Image 1 (cartoon, rainbow, N blue to C red):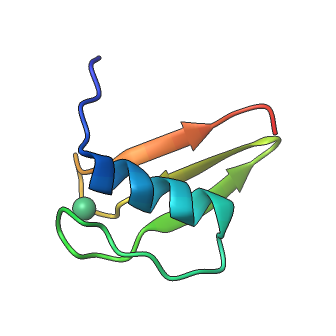
Image 2 (cartoon, helix red, strand yellow):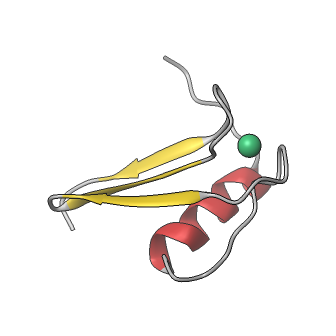
Length: 59
Ligand SMILES: [Zn+2]
């Protein structure tokens, strides 16, 4: 799977990952991004199906 997001989209995902308490909106569709911590990794995603999402492992 090739993930090809714009810089703006990556920035939004990064910001939410680094600051889960912050309200960050998806630059693509304008919905609020969701943060979910799973074990020692975390995931940030847009609630819209097939929209942007990012995962960070091994914190
Ligand atoms: Zn979205």
